[in-house]
Amino acid sequence: MIKTILRRGRDGVLLATIIAGLASPAWAAMLITSEEAALAPVKVVDGSSRAVARGPVIEQVSPAPGAVVTSPFHLVVRFHPRNDVPVALDTATLVYGRAPLKDITERVDDYMTAAGIDVPSVEAPPGEHWLRVRVRDEHLNWTTSWIKITVVQQAADAGRN
Image (tube, rainbow, N blue to C red; front, side, top):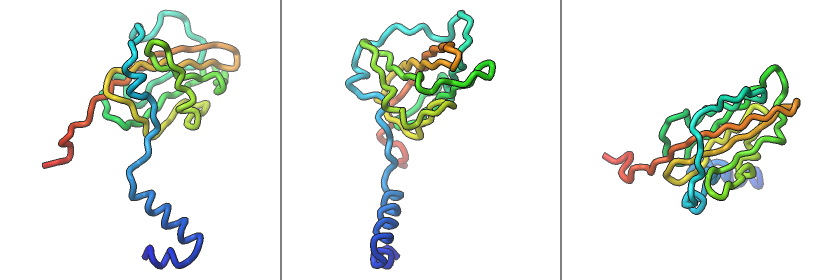
C-alpha cells in the first residue's frame, strides 16, 4: 500500500511521512532538564495562602495533586476567572523552583490559552519538582500558586513478563 502511495507524487510522500510519524514514539516537550533539577531547591510553603485572592483561580489538574508520575506525562493547569473578569493571558508565567529561579514559560507558550496550560507530553527527570504559576486578570488582580510534581523513574522491566 505504501508503494502505491509513493507512486502518486508529492501528496503520496506527505501521506507516507505522516503514516511513518504515527508509527514512531510520541514527541515530548522538555519541561525540566536534569541540569536544572540538580540545582538547590527553593523553600516552598506547601498549600494555599491565607491572603484574600481576587485574581484567577489556578488549578493543578494533571498530574493530580499528590500523584506520582513517570516521564513523559500530561501537564494541565487550569485558569478559572473570578467574578467574570477575563484572564490576561500575556501575564501568565511558569517558573521552576530551584535556586536560582528559572523562568520556563517559553517551553509551554505554544500550549497556553486563557483557560490554562495543556501540554500533552512533557519530560522531567525523577524527583520532586515545584513550579510557580502566576497569572493576573484584566483588573490587575494577581494570583500566584505553587504546584508540586513528583516524577519517579520508570521500572527497567516494565511491560516484561
